[in-house]
Image (cartoon, rainbow, N blue to C red; front, side, top):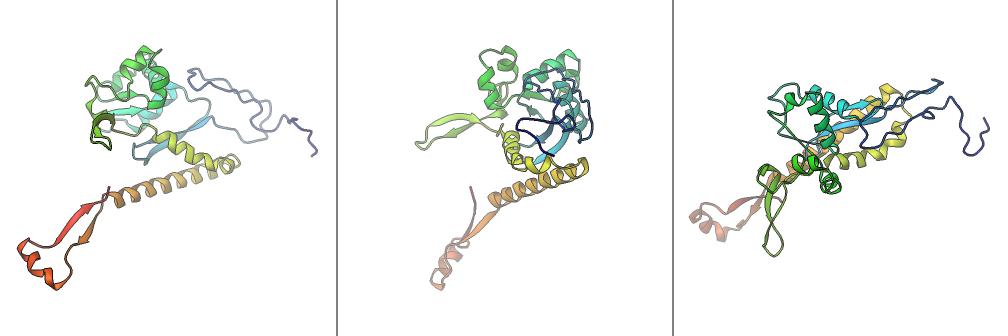
Length: 244
């Protein structure tokens, strides 16, 4: 079919898609007159550990609304024993507002605190009181000591830094973006299988790197005969060091 520049046909998918702002709460209604193409989902939502291991993922069909996020979290963490102490979301302040308004905060308040990632906090801390007060990823008032740790610079001077990587999901999204051109042409079954396989591969790669970092390697100090006597006096000439 001959198609002029900037001309689109009504049966092509995505023509009637409604854009939702990143911080928008309402779910826009997607109207389509034709269904000759496959339906498109709004986004893929992932839950990732700070180290980069993928815990769970799902698809949101219309929007990344706080209600959808809360329902997804409740499905992944159904009991108090399974819930983490902190959940970092780029729009945690909006999720917290929705949870309080819908009374679902009763489900989370005993075990979990919602915090925002560091980039989002920089943009919101001056204008959003709730975000600044309750969703700070690195509070210095002692309310969340596990989120802040003491470190030292090259001159040995102490300073405080965030204990966890709050950008793990954003970094994962950047990696997944390389497969966008492949994924957007797949049918639902192939999409689910391919994405799950790639996330599984990614998690295995992260775990393998962690094992290499924490596994101690053996250093032979004295391997010659002349140092054998010294080894016996010192209880052996081998020591174990962990790689940084």
